[in-house]
Length: 85
Image: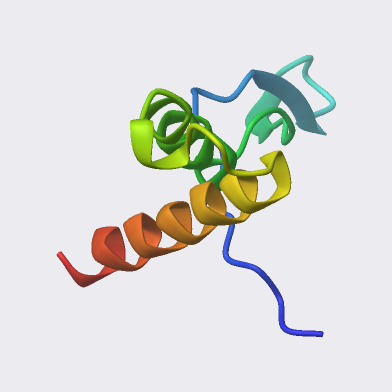
């Protein structure tokens, strides 16, 4: 199955500091550790597209699975446009 481009995290990531080195004189060296998780850009774009589609008279009678597929298709196109800059 083809891997789906999620666009990465939609919102800022939680950053923790991880100790990577301690020297014998008591000094410590830290580096940021990025925590992954939460909503992806693809999900965020799809949720915004879904809002518009659900409010559209053209989709008033459409089944939810059709609307959801359309929302993710729109999100995938938004991610492509974002990469094309």
